Image (tube, rainbow, N blue to C red; front, side, top):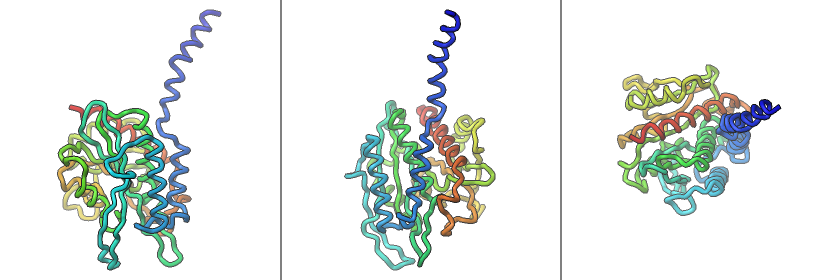
Length: 303
């Protein structure tokens, strides 16, 4: 009888912690968040639209709930720009910025995804579920994890505005960065991470920063989706994603980057990029995979 009791106690002592740590991301929250950010209520989140402002409030409320600090009042970095295509001036676009100080290093890992999308065209709403409610929601999930598990490096979590209008939010962030740019150890950008028929997620940037590849290979071993490398070869035209999204602004400042994303699908930049067309299991796995990579990078880049 005592041996059975001892076995039970061992299971309770060692089994439950393993189970509790197996899932590091709140999957229900992840799906709920992307459903809201890509809903018709937000009307495609075009900069300075009512839906865009609702998205800002949603992200700020989450940062506040998680106890994040910020170098900007109300988590908000406002900026203005001219959209030459429209001939319009956007005076109050906004990046939403949260911060967690590191336990062992003042160097910073900037984790980001753009929350804006195209908005409306006539009667059509471009909801932008994959592009890029998915990356924004992934950023929120990572912020939640590290708010409960303090990172070794300081981490800045950023929801960027106006990517679809020429990476204006990223340009503003880099131009008005609250620390010396030399303090940034790494930039992580997530843009389209919720669906792929081949079960593949790309980590772009290791051609330029090859020291990152073995760290990512170690972190992603045995995980699903499969982590792929490439789309960063100079001279490969549209197949080169080095300057395809907001990470380009950090790369231009010689900050190492990894861009997590999928290859374009038929619903890209169409009204069909909706919540109903994401692949929930892929999305959950992709965010878990990115988290595993970020945990390993946070540890391995200390030296």
